[in-house]
Amino acid sequence: MNLKLLKFVVIFMGIIIIFGVLSLGVAIYYKFKNLTNNTNEKTLLITSPKQMQYLKHKITSDQIFISYENAEKIIIKIFNINNGKFTKQIEILK
Image (cartoon, rainbow, N blue to C red):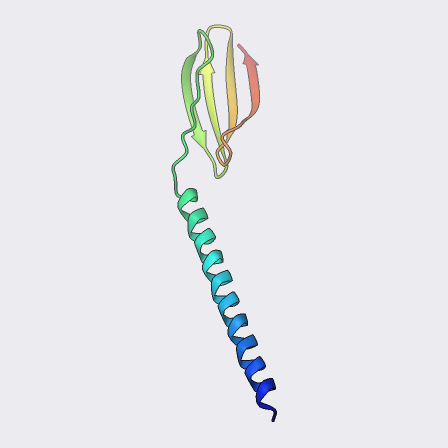
């Protein structure tokens, strides 16, 4: 076998190994960076409607139902737990 060809193959494989190790290191860094961001607790801040009393709440796997009441009606607000966004409001007249 030609010695120049053997040197070229060895150097080429070395470059491929270095490139692979660097890309693996970068991928692991980004995975751990995203992992630490996902463990932060998120707070869902919910304010009660004006002149309404808190009645009760119910939590399912991905939604929270919060009930408020006053003399005229009952309001049920539904929030998505995963993203913290308001989903729906149901009003029940007394």
